[in-house]
Length: 554
Image (cartoon, rainbow, N blue to C red; front, side, top):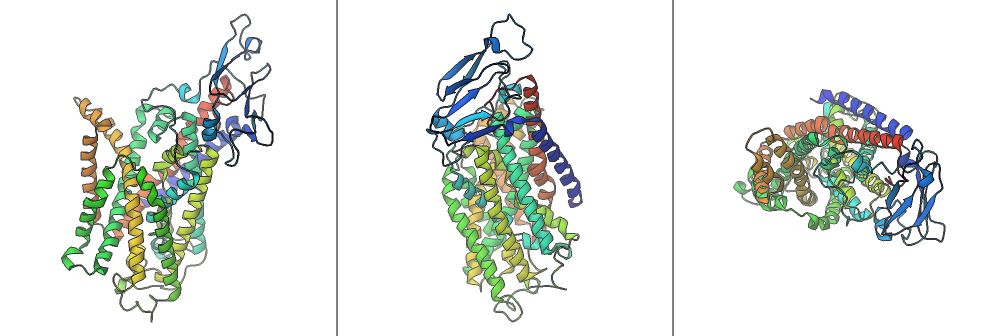
């Protein structure tokens, strides 16, 4: 399965190259607007009609009508009644939320919005906004709700989402298959971080263009409502697989904590610990319909991540697990450091590099929440979202590089898929603290991952039942009835727990590889490319027929 990864990535890159070419050559919308803040006048918009004069209106919460009489677009026959352009200009409050301004600009103050190329951009009253021009009434609901998350809070949430599952397997990944050079590994991680940030922002851009608040809604407005089962099903399977190795990590981490606490042998069995934690607190958290209260745990999760990174660096430098160190002989032989013939060459690549590739893809994967992060921003612009994505991915990249480098430096080719399993379960108090911190971060992130599963699974199951006669009531309950959704959630969590209870270290690595090679590549690269190719084609089509200035401030 892993052998298909290069082809998948090649196709993905080709799709995005085409998307970028369309974006740069054929779509003036994304780069056509500039905002200045050095005047002392209220924010204005200049509405242009090809062949005519400009009409400037101050910002108002009321719609303004601009008659075009002699200023009809090219090709309109004389003698027709002049059309009226109904332009709804944003209020100062909504402009502060949605306008493409810098964070330090007061929305009540200075600025003017103007097109960079007045020859190519003009109003055509017959062309609707993109969300209407697509021509679908998908039932997903149009219009973006007001967000409540600051840029800093969204960045913390992204770091807390990425790091707990992404940072632990990378030392195993660089050691796999005879090892990968540090330079090669660092370059791969940096490349995946950049690509993942770019594709994440592109999902936000598509959400803005379509005015849809869900990934399924964006797909319906661009690709078509009949195929929404594709992203729904893929995201459900992706999040299901991620929950499996989340649960496997929970069993390992808290099983070790139970041993460190001195619990009886019968009570510290891995499967029993995992079952107990699945019943509480994981199940109640996964059944929550409103996860906003968990946002307060993001700071704690980031602090827990920082402690774990500091612990791994400290133990690598103090030599406690090296021959002659305090914990070396106390460890099982399979977990002791094994550096074999030494470090691989700096830019070495080998068969194990494919394993690292799949793990890197999963490590930077939060695209199941890509639209959700954008919608939750209270200063919702693509520029602000780009700051969130690049900062979040940059911090995660730093964490991953440190964990990979110092984890491999300590244990070499003996590094486990869950790195914390290499440290002594009972004798190393700092390791116990790292397990507790990481376990807390994973428990906080688990319901967010499971929410991604539910968001895709319920509509995907409903769509699958659409081919079965007499299931209309069940389909409706899957989409809207909390009791039915809770039953499905309990069954899903039960199956996740059963699978994770049987997972070994090798199995966890295989699950991560499968998710990264197939579903991760689709979520990170292929799906955003398909969506944005459709967005660009629709915008280019509108431009050819006449595109309104200010319809899409991307």
